[in-house]
Image (cartoon, rainbow, N blue to C red; front, side):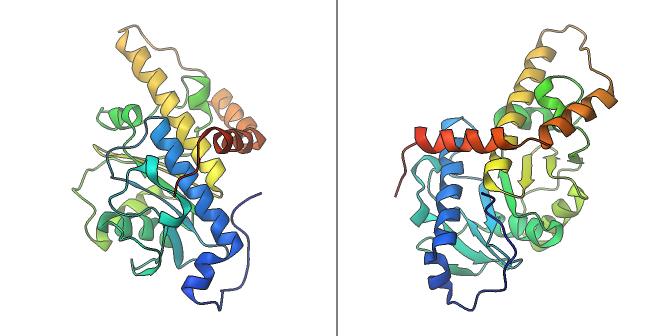
Length: 255
């Protein structure tokens, strides 16, 4: 089931909201996505962040805490904060750049789920003159046709609201962003779908980097065909849910 649904603003205290069954499920799914990213080699030290808005909210979201490796994060480690970075519930601190990047993207774009990381092959492509994946190459890449935004100017660490807002505005209605000399953002409506997109984005970037390393000319498909493949994949997301369910079975819970 999708994690997000329309509902009135909760009148419960932050601690009660944090402990509610629907938020507990979101915390479970968010911590699973983080452990899966560590399992798939997409994490980097204790840096980067995944976040999800509370159901029906635009001003409160769950995020991973500062200082924990993604492989050790369980649902009780997830922190509830508002878009200004105030910790509302949870037992950990939150790293400052998370507040600026995620708060701005949630607030400006309205995306429910925001996954930001420096996964190796996608980040490698942000270092090239093209700055991003070519969605007309591999079949995996085609799912991102017409979904990619490129933030072509690196501007240092995101340590203030202005930088987070600049990144959010650069997304311009897209749900995949390649940040120059930095990393990527993958956004979505549910944690399962966003994680599936994150995983296959890195696979597509891996294939492109390997193909480029051969030195042989690359052979893209017609853009209209790539767009048709993207629509086919976006029109059938059961596979994404099944993948996330498989990860739930395969990866032990933590915390």
